[in-house]
Image (cartoon, rainbow, N blue to C red):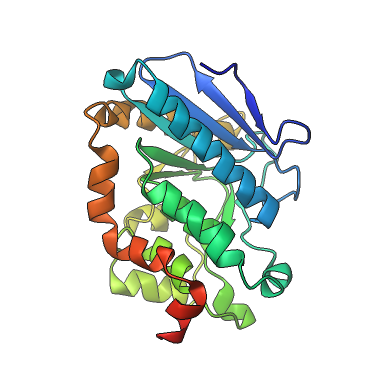
Amino acid sequence: MASYPVSFPADKPVLRLDRLQTSPSIYVLHMLSAETPDNRLTVHFLEQWMEALKFVEKQWDQSDEQKAGAALVSTGLTDPKAKFYSNGLDFEKVLQDPEFFDKHLNPVYEKLLTFPIPTVAAIGGHCFAAGFGLVMSHDYRVQNGQKGFLCMNEIDFGAQIPPGLYAALNSKNLPSNVMRKMVLEGHRFGAKEAQAERIVDIISPSADEKVESAPAKTLETAIELAKNFAKKAGADAYQSNKLVMYAPYLATLRERNEDATARL
């Protein structure tokens, strides 16, 4: 087994992977706000996400503890001043790269939607645009009730949402009125409303709970949730069932962005 923590990349890390000494195994992927302060989904950042996910997948495949199960939790920084889970894309640079969605963004969404163990996003702060798609690609979401909004703000700066990003957002089969608020209104979902609309599963900490660091509490709760479901991967059907459940969305993510857009 690997020696933890593991950094991605090793020399100038933007991600750090921990493995908790528990049974079942819980992997915690920390976004370090190193390349950008708000964890923008750049080419480099997404490449490291993919490397980290492949690394965990390999560890799972080679583990002799598979019957006990495992889970993955992702988080931004957890200090009290942390503001972002992810602020989405660097849109100007994306427009200059015609292969960005096909080679970088969509493959990460696809990897999460087909991951062989449960995934939980610990949303300690704001999460916008493609960052929103990233958390919706996880199986579960825990949101900080004291700070942070979930928002698709493309409508406010005149950008069309790519088909792959919409597939990630819609993969949890939210009601049409919720998707309308999300996509056509650019609505900012606070934690309480996000839970009421079934966008997130748990709020932690609550708005009135006194804690030293709200993002750290969000991560703690996400880890506990991950432990509850990690054993479901032990029977080795977690990935195959996700392939069935997410088949229509995976088809879009696997299609060339140019072709998917042309069909609209």
